[in-house]
Image 1 (cartoon, rainbow over the protein chains, first blue to last red):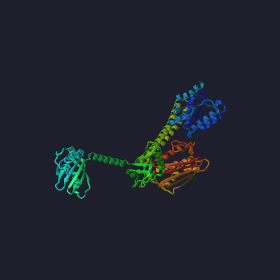
Image 2: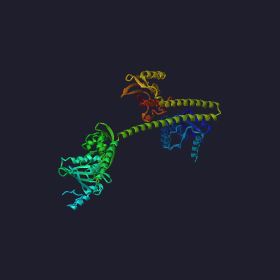
Image 3: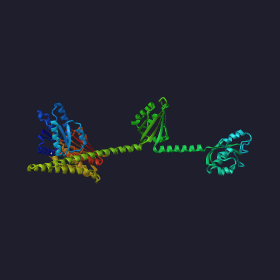
Image 4: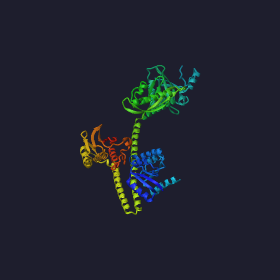
Length: 136
Length: 487
């Protein structure tokens, strides 16, 4: 089982459902949720103990003011600077706008793009996928 | 010597007579008093007969051989006795194979004898006719398709344009020089043409340009100027020849096509955005709904189930609100045909202030307006109400927390259009970041819980559906100005 997962989404109900789901399936040991990218970035910036880094981040594309892409840019900069462990980012969205998907393909840390509603199989896979990559 | 004593010139000069007979020409001699006529052998041959085969008489000539329409031409020719100069006329004569054209040269020999020479010109006459018809055809065609020719002789700086081109230019006389010709082209295209002509003269490079022309009657039209260079063996330009075509109608149609195409593209873009957004919003609710129901099914805890149900209720409310917005957006186009009425700005604006009064008092905002420069407008009341309501509620929503909100609204007329300016000193929007998205659907620029991202989208659609436009100028933490052209 993976250690830590983050979800960044300003949709309160979705975050609530996500947490319920992850907990009920016991997909990870710790789940942190953020309703905006700024808070998540601040936490990421201040992590000192390397084991505290999340293994996987679920990031909503539909955040206000295009904060999703700002988060990814800041994440990349931080990764270059600190060279912390591999973190998979999954983009989640309810949009079917392919412009976003194409844009997401330009970033190496983005593992996949998931369109809401994400079914339990897909989610479980996202968690296990990471586990497999890590153990390999 | 009387050449016509017999058919042949056989009496005195047999060699000459044979020569004369063998050429394809006929000779006749007429005594105008007695109407006695004599024909040479050649005359018979020319008509396809052998001598004596047809009756040699003045009556036969006039009544049968000469085409009836040419009879008067012939008779006039032999009647005008005043002149001694040979006269030439053209007649159709009946040959064995039908009427053909002949050239008849008449010479007065003495006071009562006339000698005529007849040669067959049928072939030439037909060629001439063909040439004439084809020339007519070409110039007629040129006139119809509005094409003319032009030429430059670079050695002598001589310049020439055809009559059809003169017609296009609406000029009486030829331009005196290349410079005189270029002067008729509108200033913005002159250098283009000058460079093209120069490079055509120097390097023989052909050109094809669409330029604006100011005609002799001051009409400004689009013309196409094409040219190719005639070059000699050394590559030197001898001549530039080309065409000038009036393409004004084509060009204008092209322009209007371009405009409507770009409008269509814009509409398409907007529709596609709309579809994305609708699908995005509906999907996010449906997704959440599905998630909640799954959790509800799997949960055994009553408290959990109650909480999940409360979320379902809130999803249902949001979904309902979204669908109401979408209905409102969709009805914009269909309601634009409703009755417009004369609306008094001040009255309507005061109604909006009253409707938002609670908000205004709560925030202690100051609302100022001046509708004295244009007090009324002919518009759809529902739209104007909605426009003012959206602008004012936006101003209240996105006010600055650091200062008292001051709103300024005025109406005025410029170039026969009615304008509204609506200004606030609120939070403002970062135009560099969001400039193109401000009027988009479900675009939120502030981390404000009330923001729904529908208002400005509807406002713009209402304004544009009635032929107006809306523009925004904004600076973060200074304020926002909406410039609206209503009609």
